[in-house]
Length: 488
Image 1 (cartoon, rainbow, N blue to C red):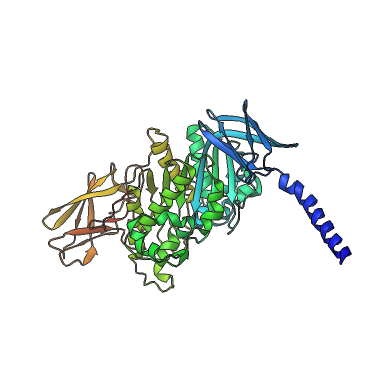
Image 2: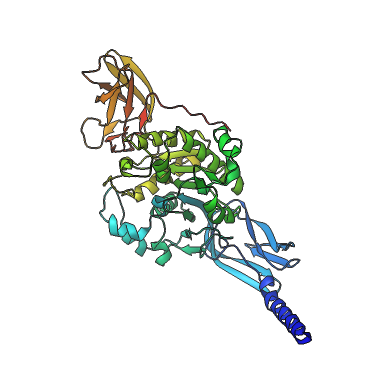
């Protein structure tokens, strides 16, 4: 027994001695790495872990900050970044005898790009499926051969239950990591860089087929009346989907890393499972507020209306109709009442309606970039305003529609505007003949003598031809839309 006791003591001491260097080893989160872009003109956080009580020295661009690691090993400093800088710099971090030199760091703007598979859709998949040089595309194959020294990418992998974001950190836009990066995010960054002439960093954190609930921490639903009954149930699921699971591993560990803004391309999976008036809009409100709280700023949040697709073919117990999609669009449009948000439309960017991953994602990226350039960067002359319904006027057997941002109203194919319907007091909609009169539309149907309401693109098959003078598509609508009001 005496020998056994001595052996146990020996093993315990050996394990302690072996683990000591690991406990003392300095560690950084994956978002703090070589090749990264730090947000310009900001006090950006840099953090990590070292032995408790150990002094940590952080040096960058003439600044030196020292801090002592806390009892839980965590340490944190803030660095002033100043103006954009394309000259590679070195961030040096020393803890005890260990020094990490993070090289090739630029100063510019950083955007977080999230959502589901249409955001995650990779550059190399675009080469295989959509190589035709349509809609002003510059070949993805060519883009992957060209150097993009001012664009840096960080791809977060799809993985649950990780203490840090599952990623290999920051990379230059080249090689395999670039081939696997988001088409939408890259063309967003490329458009920004072309206009701003500064380094652009993109963090892509998206999950194929994901709903919005796992991207939102449960606490975010509190104080929103729409979720009062859900909260009373004291459940970790929202509409049968576990809350916060992707947020916890793919967003939360990013800490307060300095960002300029967020772009979001998601909704297909929620459209498949719910037809509850304005519930998705409230979920967007909860998620946007929680992300802004985490990153410590009222970040701009730009998103994409999902594209036409045959949701009636989706069999999951939900009674989908051809109106399921436009009702969902209505929620996405309503969510733009959230301050600092805006959206782009994609009804003109579909070739195959049976493909939930439509073509022309480079156009989606550019449209989102144009939103940012106009609304965040205040650049003039950028086409970003899509025509939207304003109000109606009844003139006998005709219905006249008025719009915002409709200057130069026209059709892409030179034909009459399509996908318009009108209804009388009985609420039965029939196809309407639509005539462009300046920046208004006149609708009529010989069988409806007293029209009262109209709707546009109110079907999952809608790929309408109506655009404004900037070739931006009309936003789907109905004149008797479900009302939603953002309440802070």
